[in-house]
Length: 342
Ligand code: 2NL
Image 1: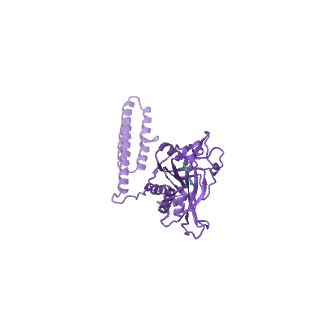
Image 2: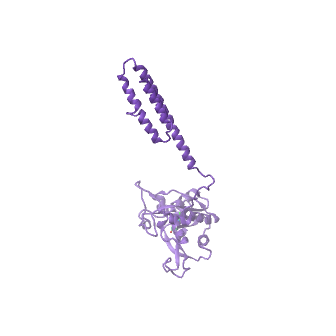
Image 3: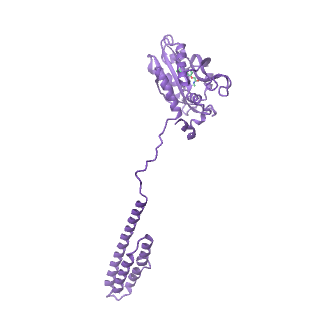
């Protein structure tokens, strides 16, 4: 029996020698150490030996078992390393190749337009001011000369929150009230950009969220000539130095008098086309002299101070400038649109 075991050990050693792949190694393991392997069967037979032979045979068999198990583990590890080395050698990285080009990000077309507007007004002494998108009824409407029930409130379909009197601002004008209350009694020259919200039918011309930029100047001896000068300068820098402007009487509750500003159509130059609906003019912003009641609500005495204000839709300005025909492109995240401005 001892001889057979020693023979088994020699056989196992010899057969393991040429094993060079995981499948052959597994086969070797099964044939010696598996359930029906040679060593396993031998160990099972120990019980049938005469009692005096059992200890020596058992000891040797266990020794061989430990030995073969260790040999198996070592060879498995050797094979794993050899395979890894082979893979590394074959799939080596060529460090001399150029890296993959990283694409740089760019600003959204709305942000680019906003920054153009800031730059033009900054040259005329206007500071950028920001205020919250959530407002109260008092600041969004009442202080802007629209008491509860005022018909002008129907110009905007406002989003109200579940908290009474708290709403999403329907225009940037409430920010101007904050500006006046903060800066009184100093003169003011600010522009106020930001998101506004209106519960409206979504069409090619209107989204429920859009950007406005409002401007406000308050001081002594400010007249409508100042309003005109500032707006003519802005429009010509934004749309070209040859632009003609038309100030058309209009109505806003917070200005008196009020005017809407048109430019001669940038497509047809005033001849009449689809863009200008054959009028020759494009409406680009609303403006006026700050209503005395609104000045007073901001803390300024209308007998001593006067001011002008204006407001424009940023996407509309951008659409006219770039010939964009549908406002829904702005925020639907279609890269085919956005990348044109990258
Ligand atoms: C438009 C017209 C406008 C104003 C906004 C304003 C603000 C204060 C006082 C007076 Cl605190 N006016 N803002 C004035 C005239 C027109 O916006 O069509 N915007 C898109």
